[in-house]
Image 1: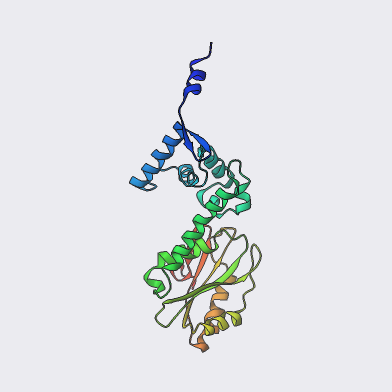
Image 2: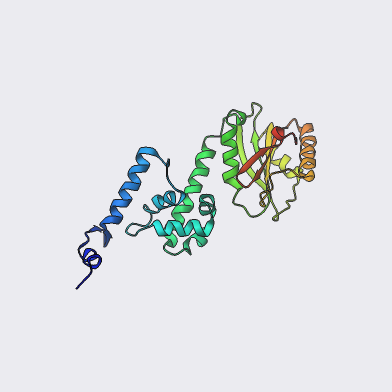
Length: 245
């Protein structure tokens, strides 16, 4: 005689979805997850539930909770998931290329969102957004890079650009190239920035020396170095605030 569990599975209702079918319990769980977000945002969500909710829009008919947990196990954190290359995301069991591209879009959309609010704005009127913009721009890079936020006379944002890329612990910086770009933009100020891929949240003596060189190189051109930001992991540190300037 069949067990109660087997009999229950045999008569469990399913939900038709396109050419496939979804278990009614999966459908109900998805609806509850979406309702929680609609009411409270991500308050009270576990990290895997954030990924799970996103995957419900990219993987239509499967239980995606195990997939979300596998992604977090593979990449460690939400940042690790969103920073991961599409090819690596797609290799996780149950993800596939479509869902991998969708997850990659999340970070790229956030980066464009942050950047879209900067042009024409004074960079020091919204320092948190500037720092978020830089963190999203460089935190996933495995190599050290150096760039600048160029501003006009009133410190309004003109452009953000990564100018040089190097190895995991070193970047060759050429002030002449930076000056040339500033003159092309008719910039009067700049916030320079670089990252420490290893996550060391402290400026080296070379970093401090480079900052001084940049200040000296800019002065004859009437261009002011406003600050130097160091991106280390999820931290964005101001040289001025830390007394390194």
